[in-house]
Image 1 (cartoon, helix red, strand yellow):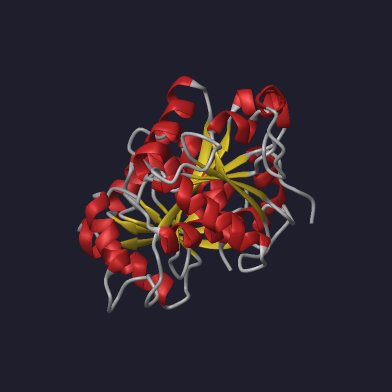
Image 2 (cartoon, helix red, strand yellow):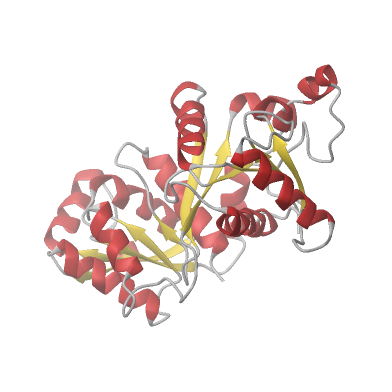
Length: 306
């Protein structure tokens, strides 16, 4: 499988594959419905909108969309609509879940419900973001896969290993056979007083001993040496990952979230993102995300779906 090196290539690749089934929770959302319509029209996903049918039809008229590209399940109540969309995934009638006009807290509670949700027993819920960053692309001509920027506040060692496994699985889905994973810290030197450094060193050693497979891991690595060959040369760092990382694993949510927002708000990055660890990918986009980001996130969810 050829490596997917851009978000456009992700979409093109999906067009040559069988469509996945997308269920949108409270699908009467103006921004989401346009992205979902594009996914349906480009044969990336068969879309079911669970929501207020009258409002959905009004939005289709307003945006010049063909309502016929959707299967619509009429449920005006956002919580019930969310529960119905989750049920479609649980019953394997949908492969990907997406948040529409339902509060994030309600959406996540439905996913996390022990009896009716989508999180398997003892699984760890996390979040994977695929970034197309202009400055990074200028050097490497590829995407950057990062985690966790949205869900896990302060992961311990075992949780960081799960986060690493999720980004590696995403990299494999993008055709990267041996992804290079950088464990990010404030420095590339092991400092026993910094837990991020200690955890990174332990995980790196586990990878080198074959306890973590399917990737090449190194850390701790500061951000500059993780992505910049020039920084590695200046600092004299000899690393199998340094300067060429495919994936970044952050030590905590503050680090990840600041990086994510810095690259998108200030660095002009485009993105696709999904909640993982669940029985099916769950698209969780921000109200501030563009239609394009929502569309690419649908594409990511379809790519990650089993």
